[in-house]
Image (cartoon, rainbow, N blue to C red):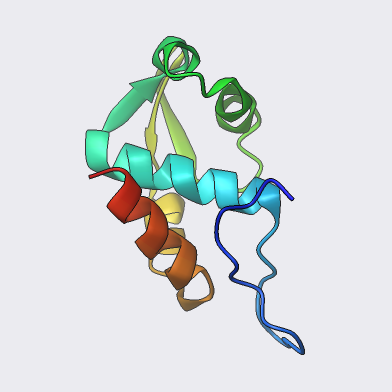
Length: 98
């Protein structure tokens, strides 16, 4: 539920499971990769209210704060987009953000 990409394969071992939260984080990371930086206000205007919490909490440290309410993709976030475990979701959201 709440996922767009079916990236989990039955019997997976030693691979990261694609949760709805992680998928949203990947979508946001792909958006930041394309746009360079994004503000929380612009996310709200786009109807992406759920993504504001992902930016502010920044659990995986994928996002870097530029200034109050404005974020960019961190080095760790760039590395995550190259992670093979996330390849299917990254490809999906890179196409979406074109």
